[in-house]
Image 1 (tube, rainbow, N blue to C red):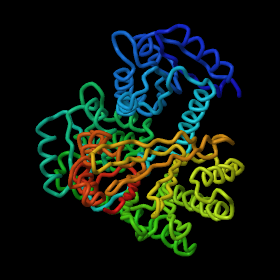
Image 2: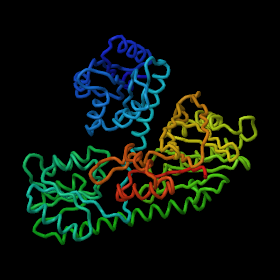
Image 3: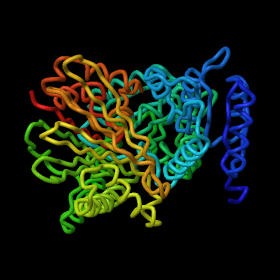
Image 4: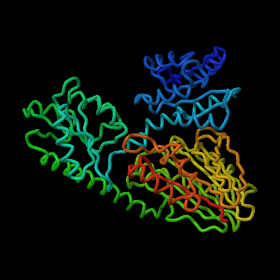
Length: 522
């Protein structure tokens, strides 16, 4: 590894011995390290240095690791910075806090240094793949039947009120603010479809605003309209040099702005529909489908699924069911990182790998082991240099209708959630399996559960947890738990979760949404 390619890791721990031990082994694996004994020093390092990953203790003076992580995540610059807790705390509550505060993983002291290095490698590789293929949330803007979101910026409150009223009366969702600073603060979670901005504003003007947006991977492709009282050739040319979509003079009035916005929306919708049509034609010619229309009927269980592609574009989630024999059914849920049809084709490739692996395992003594299936898939992926460069989370579940046992193994996936209906208790079932293709030995092993009458298993990709409402608040673990613990959930799990999720997000999903519920019948 060349020095220019070396990753930089921040190690935070008030125990100097632990700090030195971790940094020693990180350096042996050719990482650059920075050390901090508390949150204050860590903030300073994050401000001054380019950090690729954080390893943080939880118990620290003044500010603990959970609060520190939350504050780091509140900075847009560090929103996706890989963050691992290294802690002596090992309760379910602590693990829950680690995820809720924005952590990516947790390692318990005393730790195996090899495990720590593997998790560091996994998270850094995931980050590289995000950079290569683009974040899920930065997929090129497309439009569905939901209201088009407009971010309107003008320092004159009278102007903002006037245009907000007219734009909303025309059926748009408008968020109007009076400064560039306000606009930059909300743009990341508001996800505007179009931005309209005045040019001449005190402090930061419209030209600087546009330049800042062009530096943001998530916002630079959002159509941009300048609204101004100036209309000289120089002003117009300077705007188009910055890649704006259109230019409107204020004296033209709200009706002209609305007409231009409508024309832009129509143009982008036409491009989107053409792209989706071509994609569906390609899928039809291949005879390929990565998500079945319905879950299968299987004796003793009620299985339901809900899948919504991101803004209607077939994406990277895939679902598969495989009847091993009369008593056993395999359920497979995968999430492939990528852009639109690129992710879809990778999902199709992975579905093929898995189907081949299932057939292979059925001919072996380990035909009823999700872990063995994952090992076979991992072996195939690890040897395929192109496929192995794609980040994939995978959950494999085997259910039996005679013993009512459930076997589970995962690879970098979201935990299964078990609701024991008789006690209303919720349990998270996690797997230690590594991302597919990351390492020759993926650390795959089966977890076996004995289900009781009425018990519900929830399998899902991360689109549910990560999606936000209009105010930027995530649906999150707490909201999910609130829905699952309700009595109504026991009667119709998918229907109740769909209703709550759609109400919370107003159908502004941030990723593919894929959920499977498995309920043992009474």
